[in-house]
Each structure stands twice: as structure tokens, then as C-alpha cells.
Length: 213
Image 1 (cartoon, rainbow, N blue to C red):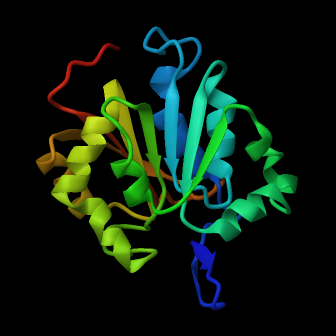
Image 2 (cartoon, one colour; image 1 turned 180 degrees about the horizontal axis):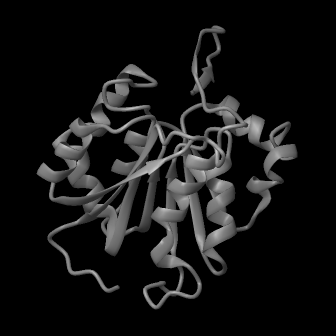
């Protein structure tokens, strides 16, 4: 589950430090075409993560992408950026000191709309549990046709957008399809030893573009 602590001490559920397998799977699937041994890897891959959370997606991305590369993170909550600089270092190491890491504190909606055409090879989105279970009320904007069209716009040719979800979300899959994405659905376990795959990864590409495999 997800837990975010706000300045007024109210809380929502955040992913546990003990349930990281599906976040790693998000990154493994989303970045598989930019690995150093892949012919599809660009000269300098650029990844955008929304949002940082407890840092496990960023950790896995840095492990996978090699060098040179840039891994940008958009995080709404300044507390989470601070935690990743302090006590979460014992879990993940000094991720924010890596020269490939670039952090933006702000709303993911605004971050996306500030980017230019063909900016990213990979978008890794781990924000809401599903479009019907939002972490913040304003996140409804992340599922509008206009926003999904912007995601297509900022992807480089051959780029992918990948979503972490707490459970399958047919609503999101339908929205992505209407926006012109072709979606692969992957079941994901919260822990490597878990018996049930209750989480879900959506791996989406722009169906209007040609992809090299």
C-alpha cells in the first residue's frame, strides 16, 4: 500500500519498504529496450520517473541503464525527496548523489507539460493505485485525453510509457487505447515470494509509430 505524510499529519497509503518487487518489475519492463546490450538502446537514454516515492524505482533504473544516461524524477512531496537523502539511504544507497539522477520537486502534470517533443525514451509512472483510487484529488488530470496525448508527444521514437498499478485497471487500459497506445498487461507480485500477483504493470507504446525490436 501507499503512505504519503502531508504537512498537516494526514496520511494516505504508501508502498512499504518490504514490498518492492513490483516496482522493480515496473522498471525492468519499462527499460528493457534501453539496456546496454540492446541494439535498440539510444546513445544517451533519458528516463523520467513520476514519482519518487521510497526510491526503489529510481534505484532499479540506475542499476539497469548504464552510462551515459539521465534518470529524471518528478516528485510532488518535498518530504519524500528529503527522506531519500537521509534515512532511506540505508535501503537504497545515495541515489540522489548519482550524477545520472536529476530531481524536480513539483506536480507530475506540470512536469510533463513543461517538456518538449521527443524528450524521453522511457516514462515510468508510479503515482496512483488506479485512476479510481487517486493519491491526490488533482491527479484526475493525468488520465485526460489531452494529458495522454502529451505523453505521446514527449516520447522519443521507439519510446514507451509504463504504469505501476495496485491492481488491473481496465479503465486506464481503455483510455490508453483511445489515446493511440498499444498496451501490454503484466501481472506483478508485491514480493518475490508472494503467491498471488495482485499488482499490475501496463507497458504502452504509441501504435502510430514503427518500433525496432
